[in-house]
Length: 325
Image (cartoon, rainbow, N blue to C red; front, side, top):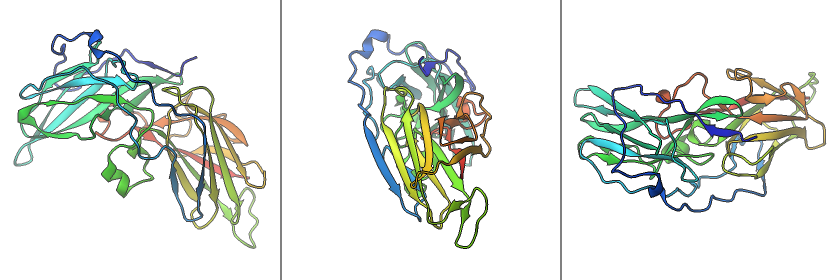
């Protein structure tokens, strides 16, 4: 069974319009490059003072080929596609313009069958927001952000703009935000996990607590090829220390077998905690509160619609998992 297919739902949250682009049909998309190959296995080590690991690094996947569009004065237009170059219908694209004195106004559109959107830009200094689409992920409607090709989202409104967007399964978002907050899950288009535990320090023996000198081992293996065929597995080793929490970010979106243990072989119990624990019937840790092995899918921000997703950020929340003996 495929984990992903595109939802047919559309939404138009602000005044705007969608129309055909330059009389261009689906055939204008042309031949697309091969998908990036993401396979094999990679090991990571986090020190006792480290607090995150970005398993896919800060390289943006190669972009698909888009049909050519000319700039129209006062108009925002472009295409939304997946990484294969398949147009995405129903994606929400909006912009806000700010005038002198703090006044602002908005415009938006949704993509048609050919992945095309177009709407008039209100006057002022403009920037994109609400750039997302609802997809079905592991049997659940999930709002996923789309990446602005070229990595910019602000523009002068009077000249008009052509901006294309791509649905990614991993990759960095705003590099300035990453530099400031490298462990923030919304700064990456891949999924994220957040682990925490209680620790027994020398002389303590609380039930379920991990030893302060212990080494946690997390293994992630795709149950089946991920969103764009990714099959890469990961092993993250984390030395316990002063930091009792750590994040794994930018994991290719899919469904994974997850294993948790100490390096001495003792299996760890995994229990979902926090605000998104078990709020999605088919997402998260399944089964929950399991020992040693479970499956995990990533969780979007709770009850967000595409119009609510900030520009140049993802919509993933880090699934919070408590580890214990």
